[in-house]
Image (cartoon, rainbow, N blue to C red; front, top):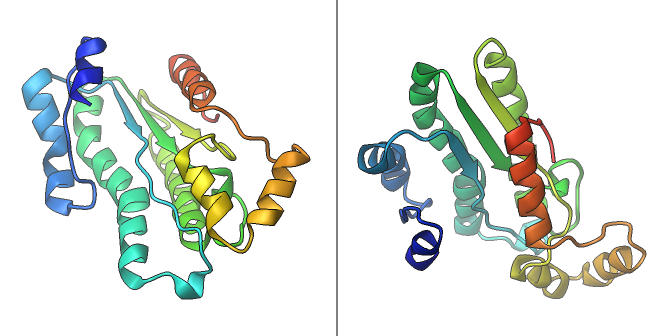
Length: 191
């Protein structure tokens, strides 16, 4: 991340988003060291790709903490500064899985539905403020995460068939990134 930040003339901050103490202090650390945050992108995520009854309690807690709790806490911590400055944009990576059930993705889908509903409620609360939001809810993205989902469970043949029929086509990470940046600039609510 440091090399990428140097290449982009930016700053790198690492944080274990599974550690509540690190999440609690991340926003203040960034703002103290480099200044105000104008756009917060909540992009970290963990998936589950096995039947719910086989997912361990620790995995469930990690997925919920990373996919749902961390974005909510980071939002809570960044909002005061954005409101004081009279500007800010919040981006949340959700998923097509958050709009409907998918076998093998129960915990993941539940957290992504939670993200989408959190943002819908937040948007209502922020309607009379200059704070805007974007929810990015792609289907399959051509990443190791999706490869793992296709390979790791009993539902892989169905997922591959859906992809071959182009019912849920896979997009590149670059495509999702470009659409997210465009939506952020245009203050669109959804990608």
